[in-house]
Image (tube, rainbow, N blue to C red; front, side, top):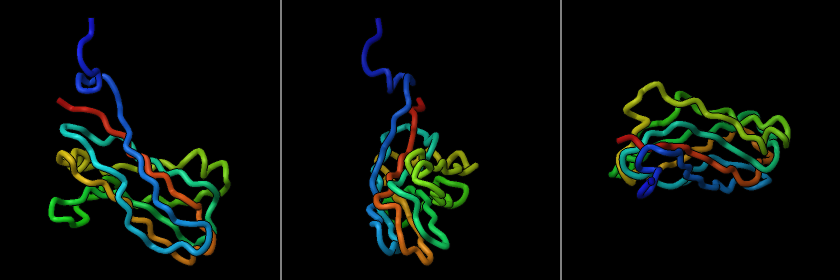
Amino acid sequence: MRQGNDFWRGGGKQVVQGIAPLGASTVTTIDHIVGSIPKNCVVTGIRFYGQVGPTATSLTAEVFARTTAGAAGVTLMSAAADIDFASDAIALAGVQGSLTATNADLRPAEDRLLEVTVTANTCTGGPGDLLVSVEFEPRI
């Protein structure tokens, strides 16, 4: 018979999600808090979802773990993800971000805030709200 929470026994992945409201008209560069990560966890995936395809020369997003002093801290990604939702279907299916190869960076300290930086260039029509999904699992 199992006792307690299987998550902390290594039994499952968890997700923290946050919405970065970009709007449907001209999109500007923003920083937005996604959430925080619990103790002894490792980030295993990052995904971005939108409501529609944006009209932009460039729209990228990158997730950081902030430092206790509030600085941007370390990136959880190898590079900013190109949020090129070429169609509404791709926006709804999401775009996978590539994780950093630095394993220590994928293990933020307990209760570290996760922040997404969205950078827009000549963006006249945005994806509406951008859903940022960070997947993590426990490590003992």
